[in-house]
Amino acid sequence: MRKEKIMKKYRNIIKLSNLFLDALNELKMARLQKIRDSLEEFSCKCKEATKDIHLYFAAVEKGWLGSTEKIGTRVNRNVSDFSYHLQRFKDLINSDETRLPKLADIFAELSQIDQEIGEYQYDLKERTISVITEPITLDDIPFGPFEIKLFIDQIHKVYTDNPYRVIALEPNPAGADDNVTHPHVSSEKLCEGDGVVSIRKSLEQGRFCDFFTIVVSILKTYNPDSPYVSLDDWCDSFCLKLA
Image (cartoon, rainbow, N blue to C red; front, side, top):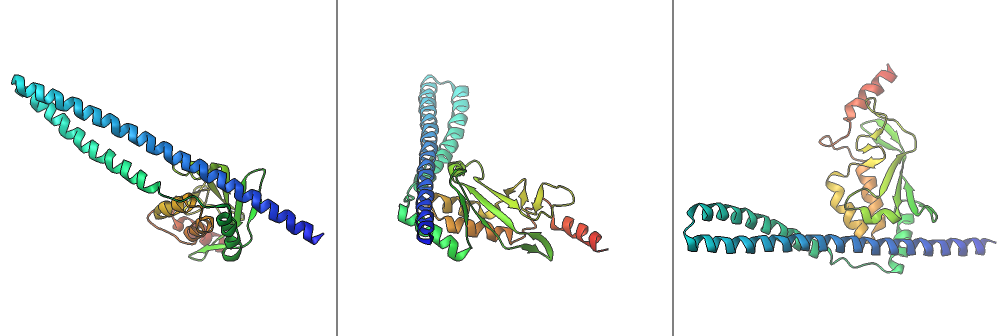
């Protein structure tokens, strides 16, 4: 019976790993589409610049001083745009060098989550994986544990939205807003701050243990420059409860 249970768990982890691989391939396609859109923008700017250059040459030949000045200003503006779109395209191309992990890599990542963060929960039907943090305390204010739930089939949306939720299991919301359960969590969405690039990279590269580690680290840290609600709001409420 125990052996059957172990084999069933092993098969489920293989299925989970395959879900991750499918999600990463979808993310790769989303990145390629972004590159395509950027290239199209870049191509349009090239055509606009070429057209204006021809108009400028024609205006100079015909001695249209007013037109040359007007077209020259537009060319200068387009060249600045051209540089921006070129750099954006180069950045996207460079970011596309990410190597997609193999099934064994994903399997190893899941084992690493178990070892470094704690036992994870998964739902193959819902296509989610989640970990539960230890109770979070900031400046002696208790926020309780949080469930970090990653929606596997939403990973491809990482460029436009958070494909995960941060759920307070013992909510201690801000006095000013019940939806704010942590200075950096509102309506179960994390304000990633400086961690946004690291989170995106970890998901792109299939480093799921790093993803959870980064999110946990943000939850354990208070940044007074970018809270949804200042920690002082909790301090005031906490002091009133103690009074």
